[in-house]
Image (cartoon, rainbow, N blue to C red):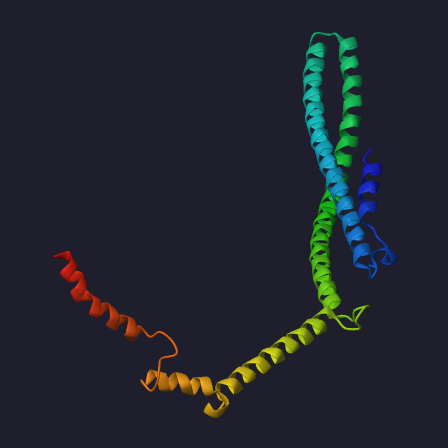
Length: 232
């Protein structure tokens, strides 16, 4: 009675070498992994259903044993009372139940062995699926890295190479600007007369070219007596 279910479960795990070969495409790999996950979920459902039916059969076996024991006791009482007709009917019912019990015990024993094998296959399939998912993630990351490093269709260079060239250009331009600023700062006084004039003005050689803090402070100090006089 369990043979169709056993065949269905086994078919979910039996795959040929050709089916096991993964295609190089990441997209196809994703499809295959999802198909494998779907098949595995179906196998888990089928196995759970099979274990539930096995549990029901064990309950049925216990009920049969109880019924046989009850009928035997009643048949003995019928024989003691001389009601052989009823005792024979009980014996016939017991014979039917014992046949069913023997067949059910054999089926349960056989299916217990199958369940052990199928459960082991399910666990190994789950491990293979987890490994496939890890491999899929690795392949996706590697593909993105290779895509960044591969030759671009427009410029003939990868995005990384183009970015590296752009960074080099920026750094070189910044270096040129720094050198220019340094060269300007190192110009001789003859090439920067305004700097010489400013230095002479700071040394009180001629009129100042800009307002100095010392001049402002001196003016404020000179105004203090006037402010005090006004307050009086």
